[in-house]
Length: 221
Image (tube, rainbow, N blue to C red):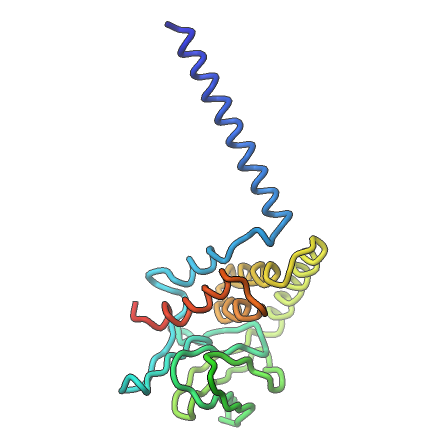
């Protein structure tokens, strides 16, 4: 009666050791080849019951409703690493404007058509300064570029990440994903979203994520 039990225990031990070894091999392979990673982790963070991104809606009629997604409007002013941020919205927007919060001076203004996002392409915004982005000259959200010391540190780390991945032969999307994960760790959600829209052309998975951003974040949670 003892022999069958010992035999079964030996088989279970062998299976367990094999499973652990396979798990370690997959983990090592994923680290060596970042292109095997997925955008699933990013989408899981963005689309929780209490998403870290809090878009602001405006308009009294359905045709007027505009959902300003990023930069968004959390309880405290959104801080951003990029000095050329990406603006994302849902709704009928004809013009996007960036102003200095201190004196309301117009720094950049761009007409838009048939798009739901645009990247700021004016003079680089200044670290530590606060700004507001307006849509259609009647709705706005304020945001702030992080201070110089923190921004320089993050810039150096991002350059290191990109250099390492390029050495491993990673493609543009794999690098954008690594940067998005990095920004997510520091809760720089506007910069996470900017990485999502930085790849051209995107994979089917990434393109699907972009579509989910406007659908999920602009729906009442």
